[in-house]
Length: 161
Image (cartoon, rainbow, N blue to C red):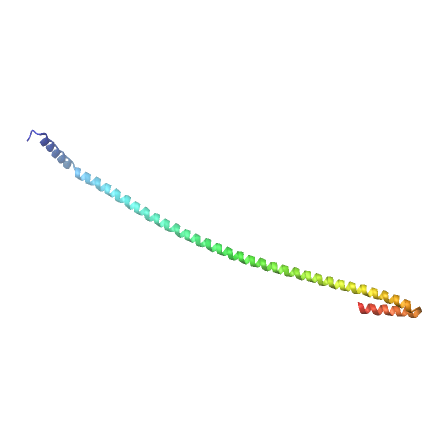
């Protein structure tokens, strides 16, 4: 049994394990594994922390987006109200302008009618005076005719004007 290779390989293995134990190999391996475990734990904690921060940032950005959308909707609604108000004001001003211009046109028409009526009356008075003058000259003569013509002219003028 001492001559077999397996026996000496086994003895070598035991000596190697003994040297490793004597030097503190298991403790070194345990420390290395503990250090790696701690490093992995730290990385997991950091990853968890980063994830929580990312979720908090995401929630904050979503809140800001909702706020911005709400503010935009409010601005749009206010703009619509303002546009309606401005449209109503413009329509009211336009109606007022049309009414003023209509009244001005009616006033001009009434004034033109009055002026035309006055001109027609004046012209009618002149024609009546001329006709009366012609009739009276043809029928009445002398100083009586002159007196009657002048009286008639004065009477017609006062009545027509």
